[in-house]
Length: 185
Image (cartoon, rainbow, N blue to C red; front, side):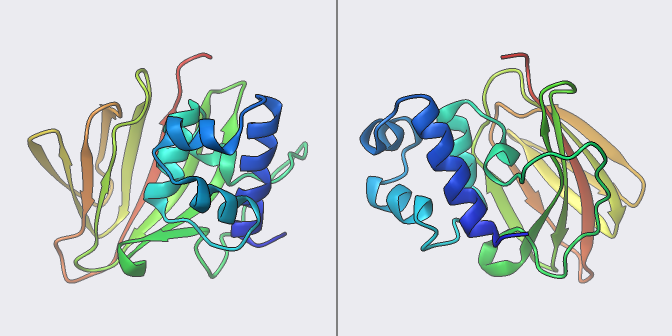
């Protein structure tokens, strides 16, 4: 398995070239600078969760399209010791379990939130649904102006095309599982 920043760069470049897009056009669509996109494609930087979401939303692709490896017939996931990507100075760690599958239109990942972690997501494309289940700890999510608090075993579903923030207000680590469902292309 290659490093995540190399994989993101290769996937971004492949998608961009398949669509016949210049770096300028991708920068305009994603609101990520041309220089940053160039560095990502070359594997020189590991982008934040926010940057990956901006690229995915701007290109109208799934989040995991930028993180995934080549497919095999059977996949057994053994989460790595290191997260695939982080946010909030490392307090929000994202582990990709299953990248986007065009048959199910879903991707699945685990997020580990350290105490005090706070990650605000920009709105996703219309039709994207998020399903979140709390695996351990407690979790607070703000969807638009509404705040929801969930404990272990509880779950929430919401449309992802609105601002939303993941928060761990507790003194213990929280683990959530996220399923992203995308509308048909």
